[in-house]
Image 1 (cartoon, rainbow, N blue to C red):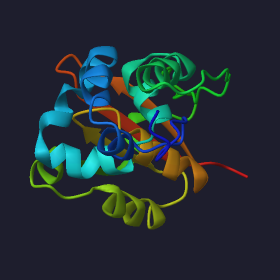
Image 2: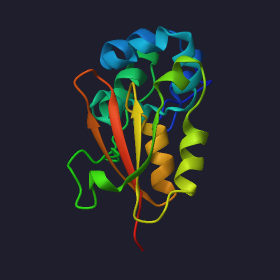
Image 3: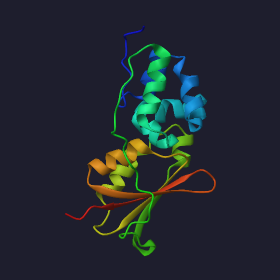
Length: 174
């Protein structure tokens, strides 16, 4: 057994596949959206910041099932956990299209190897209270949603027919 890294929900995807290269194919098989890990740009951006818990959310699988599948492959003990982060997919009461004050399509940035997180966070900080920010991404940006949530922003996301995601953010009312 390789003890250099214990696989947990908080383990970054890139850490896991660098420590245990055989896990890349397991991850792709378990979460087909992670076929994109073979793209060097996405590997440097998304895989570097996304946790396995977020990967489970992206793939719509139970985090403990994904972790246990990976741990089984490398000979680590299985875990039991009920901490699967939920992303809002039902239209919230606060959503009104006329309140969208700013938006960003992150697809060109990601294609160029840039991280949209800093741009989105900067945009959210100057967003007028009660206004909505619209983000378009080629995949579920779980790390970005988690960061915005930690900064007191509510979100709503929807998956488009072309596989992209639209995520709306608004500052939570205290």
